[in-house]
Image 1 (spheres, rainbow, N blue to C red):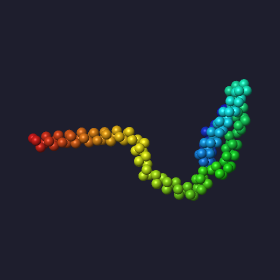
Image 2: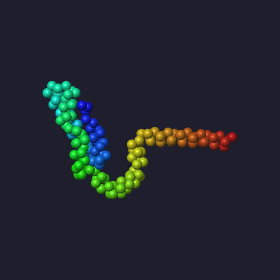
Image 3: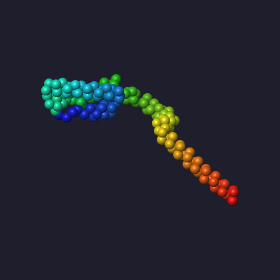
Image 4: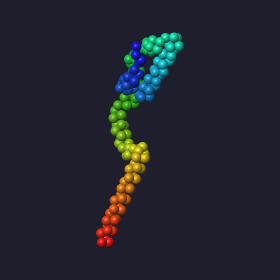
Length: 141
């Protein structure tokens, strides 16, 4: 039996509206529990494939676990519990975050922007010096 696909379980729970913190916690605990079951079986002298098969058997079907988690409404994210409020809050939050986006991007890419600004300044100085030399050559001749 293959190792249980905990990533598929996490995706399924997220699509069902379970909050990310609960999804992370559930999958982390299930992975840890599965690893503990495998370790116990290995200590009993079983092969790795047999240990994983037994651990998956003892853990149970992930669909059953997902159904029991989905059945608990208190684990849902607030956006799934109050969708009409989310329809108002999410766009307002995006509009409020728009002015901060360039600042955050600038801070995140500060070395690149610094090099770009230095190249722009250097290019401006070279262009200004060429224009000055041209102006002086026209004036002095």
